Picture: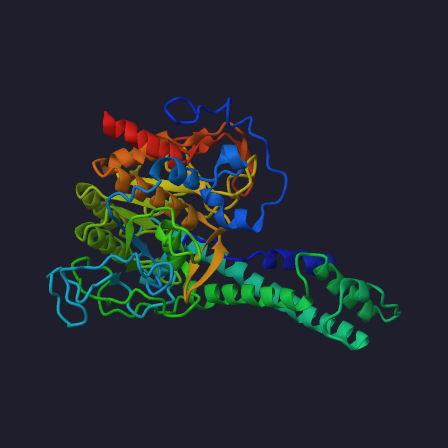
Length: 537
């Protein structure tokens, strides 16, 4: 499932409300001299800072961005570099978007729309990528599929059953609580509106009502509390709650529904040799299928078209590969997508998805190793479960057992917020001294969404493409560097942070070096300087 955090805070609120009514090398010398003595930014970020914070500079702006703009102004300048193909393996991508339509990879060995596999790669008319899931949109979660299979010999079958029972009960309770709260809010809003003889009332107007009617008093208290939150009107709160109910119902009706069959392709998902399924259209099936578009925009949205946003990379081409439904992806699709990208010239693969169960994880690992033989760097989000992935495994990954890496072309990224200091690691971000390599901007990231629109989204889904963009910059400017070298440069050139940070659901106090392999946050400026040094050597 996409490593993207959706707006889903109200069910928790509902239960409460119902119950209570640089040196000469150019690399910044760190940490003590420059970073950990940097002043905390106490003023709110401006609208422009929020939309661009991941490109800003920690020392200059006191915002833990990746110094992208500094890299362009001081290092890249007008140097275009070599074109790099970046494969985004994700949900659907709006390849007609105004910020993406001029940066698409085109398969020059394929004649468009002639219904033939001209290049004999097994995919008919794959002009800009491939859609491995066809018309599929909703899907079950992987552990639900395991339970449906009835494979009790699977060592994680019992664990899957336990997880299912917990999640089903939790979301059933969310649905009941949120539905009840929505009805209470509707009733309270109607009562206050009727008394005031107006729909658009203020908190002050509601509070000024004098009445001995206890039911009306309760209604006034409820709408007053709602209006004291970050909602301009009661209607805005109702819409937010209705949106959360859609998320809850999706989880119950599709993700956790044992009787639901989502896959609409004609292949056998347990047979890796059954290939050629899907179609050549990676576009969204519905407008809200925005994840792939958002991720792609972060990496390589056109920088010089005076529209929307600027991607991190200035000379990259997008290979759009759809594998991820609204639910958990299939291992087969992911494995074949990695191989497709590697075989068709991608040098960077971004994978902003993950899951806790993976019946054919060996297929995906084999594909990762295959990509390594093609000198492809894979960037993956660590996941949004707020726990250590050294303990709680998250797939796909490049480690087996005690942490031995299967290849040196896979980098895993945790998420940062725009607020330097103890809260700079996103509270949802997974972490791990063995399994997570670096941290990068992931919260409140502004990027493209379908139909030429833009919005901010949160998640390690956003931190991974920020790093993929930096990797594309390096490989464009210094094309002689290998995938393992680029990975090491990204890890070694980051800013080491000694400031204590809060992590996980319990908000434990940790050092960044104890929750990631590098102990650093990604910095494009430093990475390009180090890349130049290594290239010159």
